[in-house]
Structure formats: structure tokens, C-alpha cells
Length: 127
Image 1 (cartoon, one colour):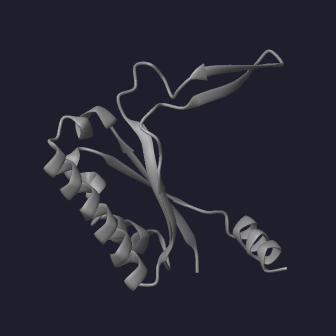
Image 2 (cartoon, rainbow, N blue to C red; image 1 turned 90 degrees about the horizontal axis):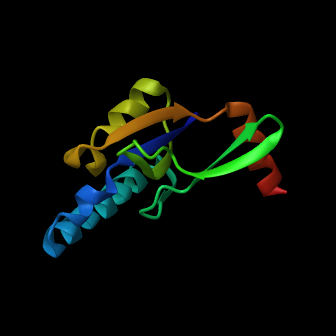
């Protein structure tokens, strides 16, 4: 079955504007969403990324340049991901609709994992 990355983008500052009870409730929603994915047997993996923009590497005229990323003017950062299985894009999008990231102005990018590469990785892990 095809695999899809649900890339969760949000403004991490918005989370810290919530009071501790609201933050806890938000985390519980993510835990429940992950459990829902597991109960539907579509869950493969997920992680929340640190609340910082990370680093961006670029090749500029043959030299690798590292900058704080993604861009200083960007307010939304990649904050985490889910890796799921779904029969097609429509099903993956439908699964994404319940994700708590959408409740606070975040966005979700749904991307299919290259099937050939996924199969090669699965084969290598099995051996």
C-alpha cells in the first residue's frame, strides 16, 4: 500500500501563547490522533520536531552554505510529521482532516513516498 508523509506546518509561537491547560489539551489531541491512526492500521511513524527553525544547506557556486532556516520571514515551520499508509491520495487527505494541526491555523502538506525507494528500504531492513 502506498505511504504518505503528512508534513505539519505551524507557527510555534502560537502554541506558547496558550495557557498550560490548553497546551496539555492540545498534546492530548495529538496523542489521540496517533492512536486513531494506529487503530485504523495506517500508522507507520511520527515525530514532533523541536520548536526552532533548523538549518538550511545550499550549494552556492560549488560551496555549501548553511543558514538558519527555513527563512527569516517565514512564520510557519515544519513542526512534525506522520508517516501513514493509504490506498491513494484522496484517502490520505481524508485521514489528514482529523489532525489537530488544523485546529490552530496550521497547514498539512500530504506527499506520497516514492514506492520504489520505500520497497528497497523495507527489503534492506528485513535482511
